[in-house]
Structures are given as C-alpha cells and as structure tokens.
Image (cartoon, rainbow, N blue to C red; front, top):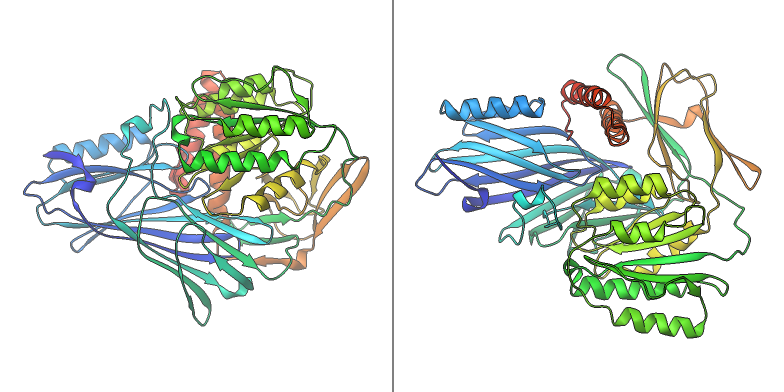
Length: 533
C-alpha cells in the first residue's frame, strides 16, 4: 500500500461550523477527500487547532459507515492502528502532537473512495475590552530547531475553506469584525451568522465580537456525572488604586530571525516605537534584538529622554532579519539581575522548538519582574506566547496585519500599571469545595479572572478577596446570579486538570512521579474521551 501526503488526494471540501454561546463555543471541522489515484492509499496529514480548545469528537464517514473515535493511550493506539493496516483493514487515528498541532492517519482508502473526516471541539474565548476574541489557526508553520514540526506537513496549500459561525443574539452584540478575512453577516431570528466562503488557508481566522453591555462578574454552572455542581467563575475586578509615579526599567526584546522577514518585522518596529512613546521621564530602557545570537543597544539600560528616543528609533529602523529563533539567551540576559523589577516586552512570532525549556527558565527566574509578549503574525505560535505570559506574570497580545496596534499597546501599559493583588483568595462561603483550578496567575484591572470550581452543591455566594497596597478588595458573585449552561463544564475542568498535571511533570525530575502523573492524564483522557499530549 502506497503511503502519501493527504494533499495528493482530491480535497473536495473543508468546512468549519461554530456556535458561540457566551465565553464558550462548539465547533466542527469537516474535511472531505476523494482518492482519485489508481492505488489504494494510506495517508497522513497535520493541522492546528487553537490551544484553548478541548477536542471532544473524532469521526470518519466512509460510504455508509460512520466510525467514532475512542481515546486510548498513544502507544496502544498506534499498535492497534498498525495491526489493522497489516491485516488489510481500514484504520483511522488522530494524535495530539503539541499544544495545538494534531496528526491524522487514514488507511486504507480504496480507488475512487470518498472519506469525510470530522473533528469536534469546545473552545473558551478571551474577553478583552468588552470584546470576545475567536481565533482559528489554519496552518502548521515551521519552527526553528523543532524535532516535532520537522516531521510534519506545512507550507502553502492550494485549497480553500468555508467558515460558518453562528453567534447567539442573547450576547447583545454591538459589532462584529474580522481583521483576517472578508466576511458576510447574515441576520437570523436567534443568531447572527458569519460566513467566509472559499477562502485560502494562508492565514489564521480571527473574529472579534464587541458587546453592548459593560461586563461584570458572573458565573455559570452545570451538573457533573455524579451529581455535583461544576462552576465557572469570572470575576471582573475594578481597582481604584494605582502605583504612585515610579521609575521603571523596560527591556524590549525583538525577534529579528529569518521567520520575521517582511511585514512582520515592519509591524514589530512600529509596535516597539509606539511602546517607547508610552515611557515617562525617569524611566530606563534597553533594546535587545535576537536571532541565533543576540545583542543589546547598550550594555546597561539608558535614561528615557528625547536624545535617547531618537537614538533608539534609528537603531530599531536599522534592524534586519537573519538566522534562527533563539529566545532563551536574551531572556536570560534580561533576568540576570535576580531581585530587580524589570518590565520585559517581547516581540516575536514564537516559532521556537525548545518551548518547555524557555517556560521552565522563566518560571524559575521571573521573581518580581514581568513579561508581556506580543505575538506578531498571521500564523503566530499563540500557545507558546500565552504560556510565556502566564509564567511571566504578564499578559499576551496577538497582532495581525491591519489590526490597530495602538489599542493593544495602551492596554498593555494599563496592565503594567495595575498593582499586584496580594493574599488572593476565593471565598466559597458555606459551599463545600471538592477542587479548584485558576486559569490566571495574575489579576488585571477590568479583565476577567477565571476559576473552575467543583463543589458538592451550590448553596452560597462566592467572593474573590485580596489586598492592594494594604487595602482590602472584595468582588462578589451572588448565588442567584449563577445560571445553568448547556456547556459540559466537567469536560473543560478535566482538560484543565490534565494541563495542571502536565505542569507537575515539567516541574519534577523524579521518574516515579512523572510516570504517575502520566497515568493520571491517560485515565482522564480515556474517561472523558478528550485529547492530551
């Protein structure tokens, strides 16, 4: 049986259908292929799904057969797949390669046979500045020194995709915009439908849904399989205090590797210059471009003034692309002084191969400094950018061409000025808590702080408490305002639990603990039939 890249088959149709319900959405990717060759084929291909998604279904339609996927441990699944192929049977397998890259193997496809592949997933969205942000990556892009992606299929494709996103009108929509694609808006009785027909897959799909109402703290709940209450809490903090005027040190780390060539570097230069304009007299700054090697504009940070600003702009405009993407060494340079308070702004497309090593170093060495990464690209490695922001006590921004950079920069500097909330605690009152997972590490003004909580039974109000500059803050969600949802929150909680176990694996060197954590992840994956690495 011949083994080929799936793109050698006739791809008849790709369609992505989504339904947006508040902060969550359900999606289905449908791909239809036909074997127009003269041979029986075994084929494989890779594709990305946004890293915030939880894959809940994998289905193959061949002729009048509908086959549904079942989660199994990777080694066992591969053996079963290969056994069936050797016996001459058809077999289908989907693997989770990295945070957002999946691989599907299909064997065998007879001559003139048509195969429909369906993948279902649940996603949860960022809501920033009263806007729901939906991202759908469409290409697996090459990453520098990556053992994984060097084996995967990526690059330009010559087929198109249809998007159909149905947005529930109960969201009180103010405006719908798409910085990545030209969209058609169709007003229906209960939904606003967004259509993109026959669009090429050269860039990620990004949709912004601006809401009418000012957002406030809220929560939703659903029943677990054993009758407990699973709650998703979203606290919206309003912080009246701010830092007194103080001198800050800003380090601008700029990716000038080969993958940043062209428009990406132009966007980056403009973004860095706009950031410099936000600095005040008394602040210090330095600029650190990197590729395979790195340098710094100055040995030490310099004062922010008109003369140094002109020097910096000239330096930035002279930057050129070259080499690979070695982010770790410039980060080590930025965090070299252990007990200093530095604000690090990183500009990159994030296409690196040593993600875990970088994340671990930042987690161990960040101390009181903060990292605010900007992802620059139509196909940015958003999974890495978001992980880096979380361990770096910061928050990411993703910038696509034609998006307003100024708003993102102003928002980032507002975050930089947000005082850290200390002694943070979720007070569940008389509710008996079984488990809790916090999505965010830091709390920012007017941005949701999200918590999953499993409790015996919802009986009381829930509060978020903490201190800022020795002043106590409390944000409350009343029991009466916690509404039921059709979204299966237990599945989403299980995915969060698997991610928590993955972090434990990264942070331990004891082999017996690592094996136990892996077994626990596999048990959760098989129990809920959801993806894991």
